[in-house]
Image (cartoon, rainbow, N blue to C red; front, top):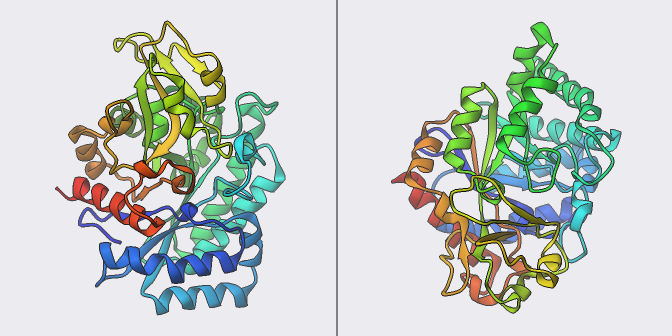
Amino acid sequence: MRLKTGQDFSYCMNVHPGEGVEDIRAAVMRAVPDIRKTLCPDAPFGLGLRVASEAALALQTPKIREEFAALLADQNLYAFTINGFPYGAFHQTRVKQNVYLPDWASTERFTYTCHLFSFLSAILPEEAQGSVSTVPLGYRFASTRPEQTIEPLREIGRFLARVEAESGKQLHLGLEPEPDCLLETTDETIRFFEDLLFAGTGSEEEQLRRHLGVCLDTCHVAMQFEDPADSLRAYRKKGIRVSKVQLSAALECPASLSPEMLQPFDDGVYLHQVKGRSSPDHSAPDFRWADLPEWLDSPATDAETIRIHAHVPLHWEGDADLGTTRSTLTEDFWNELAQDRCPHIEVETYTFDVLPGDVRAGQTVTDDMSAECQWALQKILT
């Protein structure tokens, strides 16, 4: 949906399982109408699609692409952004570190991303920008190094410049910093863009800055004990595009909490990195665990607070034992978001099928997403 700020808002459809075109069509026809009825019944409703590699390849076929575009038109829907982070299966199977594969040193990631942009360009409304979010280069504890990703990313920037020249549609890719990835903190992300990606590109730099940027996920920012409003300002100061902002929250609790209280969030599907700090005066984590089971086996006695990379609903305020990093979404953040040039805002909680029932808003994903989007819109629009 188009906001009064001129930004497009939606929820990320990676909450719905499935890797094929029919899975996306099913979600559009069965889940989206109820959510749209709550949020935006009388105007075109924008979609934040999730398109896996299987569907991306199929949608290169003109007939399949045209049929999908017709479905959107029939439902008074439009798509403006795609989550291109997970390449394959993302639900009901063990994902863990595989979510970062293929990484940006691989031809598979490059080809997949080109397919996503080709599809998005074909269905994007004339007046809208189009964005794709993607892995933050790769997993920090794998073998890929940032230098190996530079040329594929520059080539994507050139590809998007050619698409814009031919179609008039502005498209941009957002690298999404995440815990324990090659791009993790705001500072190291800025250094990558300035010292590596844009360095030595001469007259091409302006073109690359137009088409390559950051997807800022507020859960991931909070995992570094950073302030998301400060992150937005830092990117703007350095002239780095914020392609999309994903609104989300992580678990937060005292490090002294009994491990049994966090056991229900160890779902066996997703990687739940844990970061801790020993004092609120520290602006960065003092402790880290690669996954929640490691913390459950060996919690730190010296930490004061821990944050767990487990996406929890924005509308959930926590309970007597467990908190949430939605507290980092301050009035300063909402003001900064409204003033920022970021064109796309997306609520991104994909974990409802594995969350404890008392964290959820209702019995269905449509209940959950409607409640979460309503909470976010109330903050954005006031």
